[in-house]
Length: 346
Ligand code: PHE
Image (cartoon, rainbow, N blue to C red; front, side, top):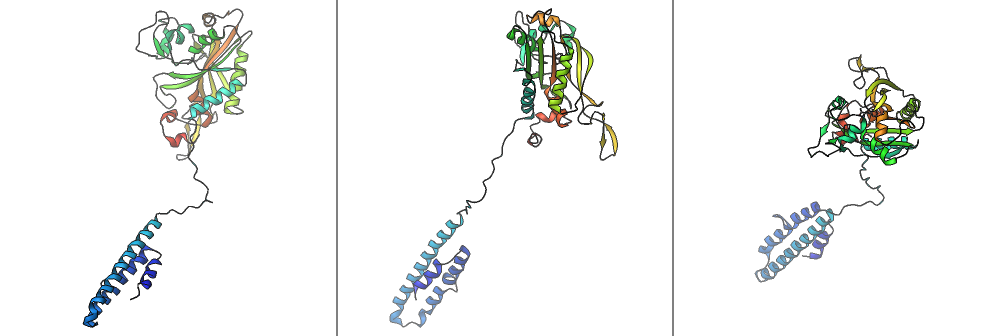
């Protein structure tokens, strides 16, 4: 009975499976220890006691060795193999929301031609949103946009508080801030109107351009709009002005740009039905960006500017709209759906 031999075998085992086999081999019902124990009947009586003690000692030492080896092998199993030469895991990177990204791009385009980026309040008094824009109290033009009022006491002279329905409230503030022209403002802010469809969300963003100086005419306006369209949407993008009415500009226009979804045709080919369908985005080849016009003399006067000496133009466009055109998107509600699979694409 050489316990060195057993121990060496146990200590050399490479896995728990192998160790388990050894345990059965030594300690199992038909194992070596039991064989030794049953051999006791052939031992002379006077030696039986000593023999039995030796076998039991051997059994204890085997049990202990197996236990120790089990611990060793199972702790080894949890050691993770680490390969220092493997490339690391890239941490997922976040990105700007498409609207934030567009705000940066639009700001850059206008800063290059001397416009100053400002961000006037999205909650303002009726004065900023209407009165200062040639829309006195009770003027029917106020009904053109359904305005959300804030439930707070009205100001004595400035009126009630509103969620601004447009960024034009920045015009009067900028005129008063700068004082003496030239003024070149690009005001980007949130706006609110109660609409919800593929091209409207109740909260949206506008960017408002305002340019006031000596001898400013519609030529400067059209030139600036064309510059913006080519820089932001790419070469070949056209703008068009349609006569319109705003209280705060005279003359007034609506600005359209040629639609990038259907290429200005107004129809798209449906791959499944193999037919031409009306373009879901523009329906006519053009998409309305917003309003523009020459600043009304009353608005200049209200901002403290001499309308005999100075003239200017202004425009207000939707950020969500311009993104839609740039990337050919057909539903701006996706921007605010919180669906990361949509947002990740930009
Ligand atoms: N404020 C107008 C709108 O939201 C757009 C506009 C801005 C029109 C500036 C003319 C001049 O519809």
